[in-house]
Length: 313
Image (cartoon, helix red, strand yellow):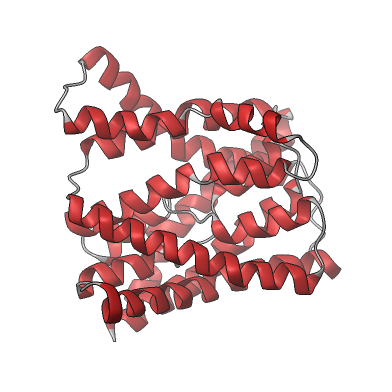
């Protein structure tokens, strides 16, 4: 029960307070959610990715192992999702919305604090989580943009949109500057630090604004869709991660118990705010995306605790 209350008090409740502030602000002032979305995509998200990749100590061996796990895990999730999408008969934007709600998970403002809690601030597990966060920032800005526009835009327009996303340039730049040990001048580093610190708050406020601007009608097909998304993200996700870790350890390479635990915990977090930002920015099922994030975050109080408890056993 100690882990449960710690996660509730230190992770979920702070997130919920920020979301509630966004809802209140939206009801009071009718904020422009498109502006908030652009601030997240083009400013705050690239800043936090650069800041963490440049400053976190990560070995080449860890990079290789984590990236191999991540690719196999995402592939397995995609296969399962494709089966579900076809069985449910989703069409158009709803196909992309369901995929995004499961494939994109909250590896930054939920995953990093959770990692530090579950592993007592271990720098090794933090480096693993930072790599997962890097990939979870890159994919929504590439595949995510393609998926929400593929049914209504030509390929050239989609590629122009993807090419305008700063994150795809920030990641190689951070690795290059770090690899060559190029120091960042303080007049640049300080603004990056400020912007990185603003990411979590702004993203959560954006989610709250979106939730505050819509009518809550979680019933019928919407209830079933959100429930299915939460099941696939919170329960099937860590189960599939365990399968990938077991297969890699058994047949490909030795994975330490600490890395295995960190990878599985990283897969157990709720749906990412990125799915909401994509839905809002490109007007693709924003109500479903917002409710999936909100409900999965609430349910994760229980599911994440169970995953950590099972790993301790």
